[in-house]
Length: 475
Image 1: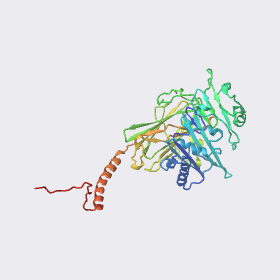
Image 2: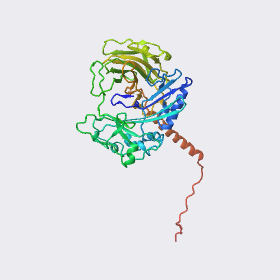
Image 3: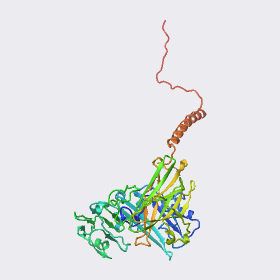
Image 4: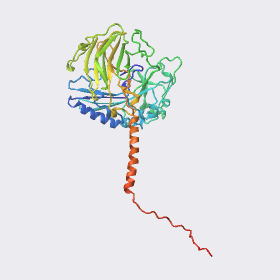
């Protein structure tokens, strides 16, 4: 995976939650995916149980889809919004052999972890041909600091013990030209890599706290720790949405970045709108890309408005419909034209989303602008979230880069997520109706119940303690 700002960071994930499940059979995929999503939601305490058919689909041409066997099918869903809680880390740590009691996991403080610039937790389960399961956990943290220290980032130094179940525990250091500023000094760990083997270091030292003080002449100020974190000193956000500008702003672009992505909405009132995605080629050769975009059913897409424009031409690029079957898919046919429409799935109200997949060939420095119009739908009252007036989050699109014809590594990019405003009812009306109804009902029912249960009778006054004596008058 690749992040447009931080570069290659391992298993990069989009905002919210992402679930990818590959099944060996084509039968009853929807019910199987629903079962998997509910179990994962129960194990990790997440909102994956809401990954129903309205936001899930079967991508055919994206890079994470496995094409090793024609009988396999990949089901994909993306929750654009996931509330973060410190308790989400607890079930993830319980899957480790030593949990957070030993090893590198002892550094993980939930309060410190969720205060960083970026964090991502992932669990990958694969089944081998020998029918054995492989379980892989990864925690990715991005920290932007001028000075690196364990106790400053995690709130505590790394103080043994090492987890006895781990076969290898090490910290790998990359991106620094001057290792003398590290305390303790790194050592060779093999394959021309510099770092620390914690099993040997912690046996000799009670307190192992990696500390780095950069010098004034140090140019490389990024750091990358294997399975712990990845950082870059690059600050700022990319807000360059000028489509007619042929120049490329390199201020916030990573050195190894191959493409630049922009995605935004164009709306006209509460009825209609459009989605615009811009892709720029930053390489010196042609790029072969596939775009996967899934829009929820309440964005009723007009696919006849799907257009692609290039900044090299003043006219729209003709989109060729290939109608390729999955079994006949190959790269020579996939990128035979500059823009090819691979697949379209129309939406169903309160059901499946709208999906389209494109195969694109971008020249060096070329920018494609893909736009499509939609009509906003109306949701039932119970389909609105508790904060419906905030808007509805739209999952990002996925761009896969294919690098067979050029010396480029296959990567997956995610665009920005979107926030869509839909017509929402007045949520205070049900409260007002319930209040006045219950008040009137209580007044009537209280009086009626009192008349039914009350009994008529004489009220006897209590006798007074004082005695009144009446004396007759004397004549």
